[in-house]
Length: 341
Ligand code: SAM
Ligand code: SF4
Image (cartoon, rainbow, N blue to C red; front, top):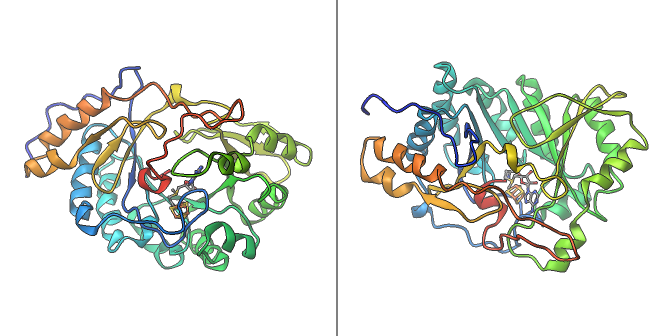
């Protein structure tokens, strides 16, 4: 048993931002190879480098001890990690105790059909499913390995299990730019919220290839406004999206715009990898190793101290910039699947 926690002050970074949101990448592996996220031939971490699920439980619980209220499980594909449902059940105990407000996940949906009920039973009320196109052939092309019908079945199962679903679509020039209206209509019909995301310069990719994919969401919004009546919404999820209400469908439409609108000033989150590295910003390399303090002692005191110290390293913001026909602030060494998007 761990000693009672004396230090329960919230985590506050050097810019006076309270950190109460932890995103955890529980694996770097995935059953898809999305073109903007992974290369076709990925080398994954050796299994021995991963934290065990018990260790991830200790780490996440330490964050909850320090005031984290929202936990998002991601990857790689979180639902391909063996025994991951055990981990969700363990995190569910923090919901039961009232110390955690929300347990959620971001998934590609491929395994959702078989896990939806278990997730709901563990206390997951909302799920984000990534889906960039409703065309099966294009879906196979962008994910390289994915099957659209499995994802659609997963979405259906999640809805039947009572979860609210948000679709995240990466806006990609010359790929899904002709589909935005169809996707809004489909989301309205299926009772799903929908958010468009700008492509971020993560992982290795030729600069021209990256620029070729980039479709600024200001342009996407102009396109959408030609067909739909959208008005800015006051809705907030604690995430970086800005929301609009679509009058015709009654559903919400979100935009995540790290490039055209920088939202770092209200950043409340940090990211933990499956090896125990804590990244303080998606777009910067500032990080701290939590695995060593975790393994140093069976008590969680050293790990809590290490978390507090790490928060003092959180930078003011990212430097992503596609302006002047170049890609700036790129984080080449880290694929999105490492820090979890
Ligand atoms: N495998 C899960 C999934 O796809 O939802 C979770 C991990 S994935 C890395 C999380 C999110 O990051 C997905 O919505 C994906 O579309 C997004 N993503 C990956 N690479 C990206 C990039 N370069 N720019 C913007 N979003 C990206
Ligand atoms: Fe896998 Fe998600 Fe990355 Fe696609 S975006 S390759 S589904 S981790």
